[in-house]
Length: 292
Ligand code: MF3
Ligand code: CO
Ligand code: CO
Image 1 (cartoon, rainbow, N blue to C red):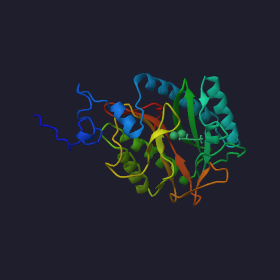
Image 2 (tube, rainbow, N blue to C red):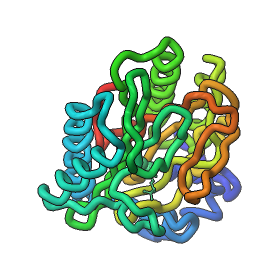
Image 3 (cartoon, rainbow, N blue to C red):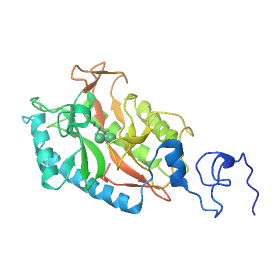
Image 4 (tube, rainbow, N blue to C red):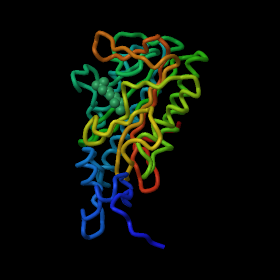
C-alpha cells in the first residue's frame, strides 16, 4: 500500500525535516542528497568508506596506546610518565598526538585523576594506590582523528571508585545502544541521563561528545543528557564520540587556574569512558572498539 507524502509530512529520508523543507523537488532523480543536506543545515560532514577506514586505522592506534597505558599504570608513576609513553608510542607508530598544542594544551594526552572530570594536564603528580585515572587519547593518523578514553584503577579501588567507574562504563554502553538511523541526538543523552541519575550519580553538562574524524572537534555536539526525540536525526555516515562524564556527587564543575583542568565542585569522584562511533545503515559500529 502506498500513500502520497504530504508537503508537511516528515521527509521519508529520515532527516526529521518536513518533506517540503527537505527532499521535495531537491533531486529530480529521486535519490536524496543527505550528505549535502547535513552539510548545509548542520555543518556535519558525513564520512565516506575511505574516511571510515582512515578513522578506524587511527582508532586502532588509539586502542593500542590505551593498552600500553593499562600495562604501565601503577602507584608511584607520575601523570607525566603516562604522557611520555603516549607521546613516544604515537609518534613511533606514525601518528600525531592531537592534544599537543591544541588550543594551547601543553601535553600529548589528558590524564584526569579522582575528582578531575576531564582535561587533566600531565605533570609531576604521583599516582597513589586507590586512585582512579582517566586517560584520554586522541590520535591523528594520515590526517584522520580518532578519540577514546578509559578510566583505570590504580592499585586497589575503594567501593566508591568501583561504583563510579562502573556507572561511567555502563553510561557509555547505554548511550551507544541508542545510536541508529532515525534516532535523535536527544535520545542518546536521555538514555544516559536516565541511567546515571537512576544510579544516584550525576551527568556533567559542560562537556559533550562531538563529531570527529577530519578534525578534533566537529559538529554536532552530543550532550550526555537531554530529552527523547529532540535534536538532529542520526543518519548513516555520521561519526561522533560519546564520552559521558559521570560524578558520584553533584554535576557542578569548576575550572582550575591552568584554564584546562575541570574538577567536581563538591570534590566527588568523576569517571569517564569514550569511544568514536559510526552510524551504520542499521545501528552503529565503534571505530575505537573495546569491551564495556
Ligand atoms: N580528548 C578530549 C575529548 O574527548 C579533548 C581534549 S582537548 C585537549 O574531546 F586539548 F585537552 F586535549
Ligand atoms: Co572526545
Ligand atoms: Co577524548
